[in-house]
Amino acid sequence: MTTSPQILNVHHAQLSVPTGDEKKARDFYCGVLGLKEVSKPETLAGRGGFWLELGQFQVHIGTEEFSGRAGTKAHIAYEVTALDGWKDKLAQAGITVTTGIQIPHYSRFEFRDPFGNRVEFLERI
Image 1: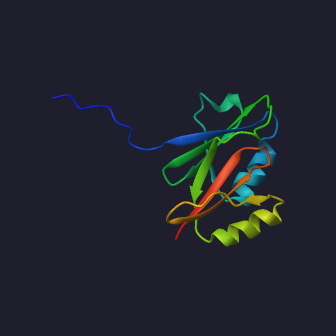
Image 2: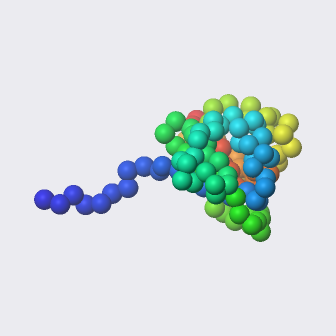
């Protein structure tokens, strides 16, 4: 009997920042959001960017010539605790938070990172 193919989980998501802005991206993603940077495989190290890890999930920050992201709906969503605390922390970092359409069982908001990538934070209620 053949097993049908299936998707098991999400391994990683990639966001882009302008070439040369890795320090600013590290300051935001590691400093403000508190994500942990992990080493990229040696075979990819020369391509720019860096990788972050959250449990078994990775966020890859890639670099590219940049046209901005302000109009896109594409995003990454993080389940968090203390949603109001995150609003305060992001405001202190100069990030504008937008309350989106609410969904069952979660409070949520979204924001754009310093490079225009859309990010969503959700807290189970």
